[in-house]
Image (cartoon, rainbow, N blue to C red; front, side, top):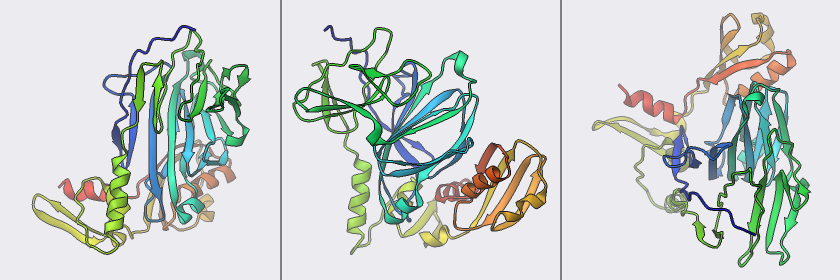
Length: 358
């Protein structure tokens, strides 16, 4: 079998997305996309706890493509404007067809945050062809135990068929375009040849270890130094005082007990981190698909202020819990569609920017 030519080998460097730091091999300065794949994010591994939970992605919209999540470690709760709610566990895949538009929220489950653990996953964005960009939105969740598997003769290579086909074995996910998606585990010395259709482009992303492709290119994952530094600081801090200097507030929330913010030589804040984050007030701006009366909100708990402009409402709550989930429930109970939803509550990153920008 003739081997396909390897066009490019790229790095997977860290990028910052608000309080989240993750790896982004697509796009980069050298690789814009690998059609039809327009973005790949490798998030984690994050040590999630009640004290540190940066990966709480509130409701946000997508349109015109398919965001796909491969959960490697941990447990996430998915909720969307179609009414779907599911717990995605390690090894599971969720395949969302945004089409004409969908709003969804992703976060570690409350139980997972309470007991603590490691969260890691891959999110891949798959472009939809022009004629399908405005199709009806759809959501698919497949549990890891339901995927079919192809195994090499020596049992050293195991390939989960997520979507598409390999060796006559078909994936569980129904796709809008001809695409093959596999999760591959290779033991030392394992070898397997995958036939790639002539009309396809293909990409391999390495999660851990190292692997050789086409007997020529060896892929190696950079050491995830960020997590190792966190663990070192936590261990040292058990019986010593550690001074940690950074402008990344995610790291501050993950490892620090006390925060000192200095701007241009002046100490602006010197306080316990829990006291800085102790304000329970949060304002959520939500736009519904139709006009509703103020009295309808009476069943929403913890409201301290309510303002509106036609179908858009600014709702201020006093609660330690993220009230965006309650907004989702409220919309479903009252047969409302959420067109836009934003949380205006401040995290440590917002606080830092606010007091250092003046």
